[in-house]
Image (tube, rainbow, N blue to C red; front, side, top):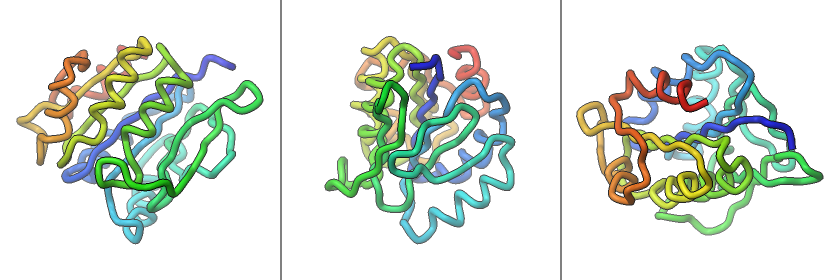
Length: 189
C-alpha cells in the first residue's frame, strides 16, 4: 500500500458551520479526508455541494469499491455507513446499510475503526461538536493504532457531548478550539 495519510473527522449538531470553517483550509494532496456529518439524507447532497464550491480539494461522495485518492474529501452518501478497506493492496471505499450504530447511520465509529485498521499510524481522528457519543470508540481505535487524536473544546462546541465522550476515553491527544484544529492536524501529518 502506498503511504497515503488519512484524516477522519466527524460532527453532528453545529458541525455544518464547523465544516464550512475547517474544510476549506485543507490544500495539499498528500492525504485523504473522510468526513461524517450527522444530517438527514435529504440535506447531505446540498451540504456537500456547498462545501465543494468552497474547498480547494475535491469534495465528493464515496462510491462503493472506488479507490481512495489523496487530495480528496469523502462524505458517505445519505443513510450509508462508509468504511475504508484494503482491496488488492490498496485502500478502497466500502458502503453499506448495516444497522445504525450509536443511533446513527453513517457512524463515525465505524469509519474511524476502518481508517485505524487501514492507515494505522498514518491516521488522524477528530471529533467536533455534536450530540451523543459517536466517535469515542473510533478515537480509541485510532490512538491504539498509533494515530493522533483531536477533540474540539467545550467553549467552541455548539454541543459538547461528542467531544466529551471521546475525551472521557482518555485517548485524545489534544483538546482545542475549532480555529486551532487545522494547524494541529497539519502538525500531526
